[in-house]
Image (cartoon, rainbow, N blue to C red; front, side):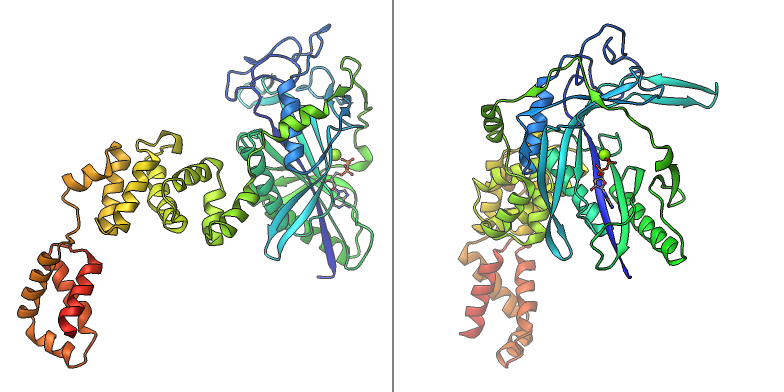
Length: 476
Ligand code: ADP
Ligand code: MG
């Protein structure tokens, strides 16, 4: 391809605040239409906004997690447009002076880590929702969402492939969820993204005309929509056409973008400072205090798991994908030091069963110590790996102590030398010809003889001991 694509992303993340940005109405999802409304978010005349301080804290924490400068003074502006889901006729946002600027987010791509610059993060209120009832042919307004606090996170045009754009969004979502400011739920619309896409001839120092794509509500669609749009722009230019700055809508069913409005009739939002809210002033000490509340971020955790715990990259990625899982793993690690063995169990049996039984890590019936004791029993040769899986399943369902389960189920391995030697003697006698073959140099027979001894011991012989004693007996 002779063109370099460029992508800039604008993300709207709904914040995990119990009440709205400027009034005390609830933000709960899935309520009856217009159940979560107060006079302010219905734009009743004479109502005054009162800033939700928790939202400001969340914005600052997000800025810090994304290595932004936190502006100790920022401002509120009105952005005007007319639509039935916006009764005041303007959205309160931060236009001129946002709360956070100049951050970066490092994104893993097939070519390694790449820093993507974050231009700005600002707070704003969401609009309501218009619902079209096909039966009555009426349009209904639901203001439950009106006034819900959002963060808009705007990247610089630093992204060059659709894959990188999806990786940026995943990484951003993970961070917001890790630091607890958003649930990052794409289906419920709490993490929405618009993509700006342009192409320019390879080597060009200026960017091409950009197209903004709206309505992309899954990571898979982001990638598809951008790929489609790049191909469309290339084909327009190759066919001697000209690109126009416009907003296009992603149609997931047709798998294409189509024009929604061109920049010619783009709205003039008539931004001006919100007269009912003073500039937002933050103390440097507040920023410092919030810095201390940030957890280790997913990327740092991932790196530490590889570098200090010696885990493979795959394990590190699985274990750090969710904060709860990572914290559970680390909790177990304080009782059981072999990180790789623990990781195998957590990624294998634990994840499988907690998914099957739909149990959260915080609601598990057994303690981390119990889990550790089970793994130690395997290490000490008290039970086989297979038996341990059976014990684990039982412990998972009942919360019983592993030692009791091992005893009740008769799963303890036989490590009694005398008992193993007796079984070996019987097997060698019953399989005299195989024994001779082994001694004549046919070493492959060994596995067969081990199998026979294990069978004679009903699978409970300690395999390491069985191997060792059988070899002693055959080689001497
Ligand atoms: P607006 O003021 O219209 O919102 P911005 O300059 O703030 O425009 O940019 C919005 C988004 O578009 C940002 O994420 C930015 O990185 C991206 N962007 C700007 N110009 C281009 C371009 N030529 N190609 C791709 N993305 C771009
Ligand atoms: Mg913008």
